[in-house]
Image (cartoon, rainbow, N blue to C red; front, side):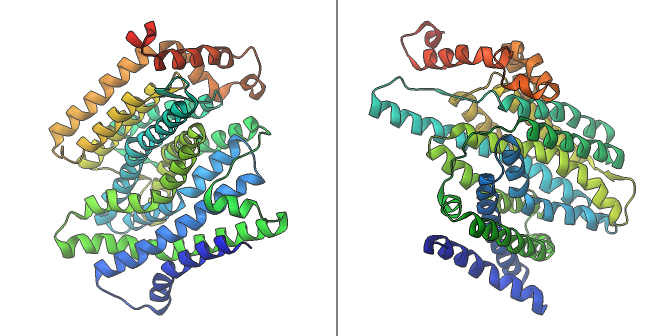
Length: 435
């Protein structure tokens, strides 16, 4: 095994070691110290998990690899969120924490992750354009294969509005979402191509190893990181709540933003590394797949975990949680409306980030309703602008796999035109740019 990857793995294990020792020995510290210890362990394990998941693409190619990578990368978030849902089955005080963690991570992924990747990718493209004296691009063109993921996300985003209307997440509704996730994995597997994957950072070091050594390393990293995450999830979740109370902070706020920030950090870093390497399409594709996972498997698992913990046949939501789901659903619809045409311009990316930032200042019910309405109106505007792409996107999850690669596919036929539009928009003297 290369020394460089050994060193990185050793650093992660050293960071995670104190939390494992605390959990095994049963020693209890002050809530804030436990929060730092277990939180650091989850972040370190998440890096190991993300590196292993990315390296696993060497043996699993295509869209299925991206879907599985996105699923595995959010395991830390699942562990914490499902713990809150399970605990809420016997303790009603934990009911609102499950929804808080899910909505926070969902909005963080789209409001911060998507813009981060787009801005980095376009800055890299601008630097390359100056070096080669070629036109500067102002938008990132997504591969036509991304339409399937976007189509699933559109469907899930529309279905998500049923949650605020129902005022709960019934177990039958959750089961339906899990079935949608299963269909998504099946379609991703059918659409998998034979193209060679590119790797960066630690994953590239692992991929360079001989096949047998690589596979053993990946499996061991999966096992060790999963063990650390599952060992740390419960005390970390409890420390979040206790730390809020001891510091006089809103525990709901810590659960909603601090926990997702820790669990999503490795995924953001990997996506940023892809973008820095000029692989913006792969980076945004991974984050889109994560959104599909969150709205299907994660949300669908919450009422099941609640029931397993002794609760009823549905996860009830209070007024604040209904607001959170409404805000999250409208943000999702806005995000997919922006990328329906398989182009992501820098201006909408900054707009998404600005709307996301506003949420930290708009905390009252009326303000959140206004913000949700603004996102819904903007989504309608983008849907009108991209109306020609609505039906192809909705049909993509149900289209036969070979149609995704055939020359008669409307998506493929439109790609050259999209490229010309992106190029035209990059030229300040072109009619399209002036418009």
